Amino acid sequence: MPSPSLTTLARHALSRGVTPAAAYALLARRTRQPLPSARAVCLALGIAAAEASRRLDDCHAALLAHPRPGSEADTGELLEALGVFDVPAVLTDTDRAVIDLFLVAIDAMGGIRAGHRHGLDRWFTTGNLTTAYLSLAAAHPMPRTGDPARYWTTLVTAGELLAAAPTPDTRIKLALAHCRTRAAAHV
Image 1 (cartoon, rainbow, N blue to C red):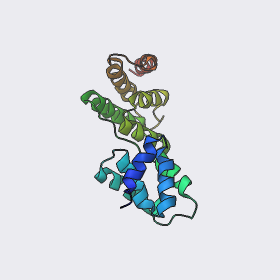
Image 2 (image 1 turned 90 degrees about the horizontal axis):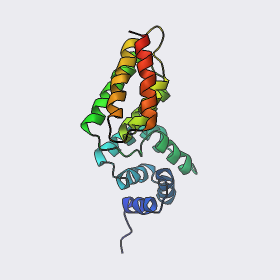
Image 3 (image 1 turned 180 degrees about the horizontal axis):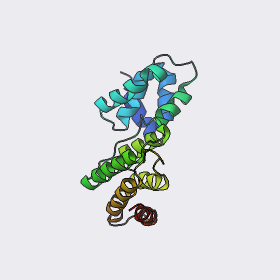
């Protein structure tokens, strides 16, 4: 009888409540094949093969080419933190418009920390636009290189789109009020 495929094993582990990082560690320990194990977890999560390959190509040399023995759990956690296992959300036209506005706001910041940008990119991928909005509303444009008027007015427009949802998160309305106040101060 043939053994189950790595993707089938990953799917089974995930169905039992195992995190993607732990599923990767389980497969990588069992097979000693880090790249196929990571790919199997991606596929089991429903990430398209081409997208999985692109994500894994980005981190293959650093994490998967020559792993330290016993580092499977740490590698799984890093892959998860890098967003390799993030399942892309199905975005509506409104979601895409909000993300486009977020990108304009990021440009108007005049500079953004790499970690903040990485978090935003992950939230865009997973469709967590509320968290992205709250994060941008709590940030500020750079004093010398940013464009505060464009930053805040863009966030007002994005917030209005998010607030127009059938049941908007209460935090959106509060952040929108904050953005309106900031925009009015930079007219």
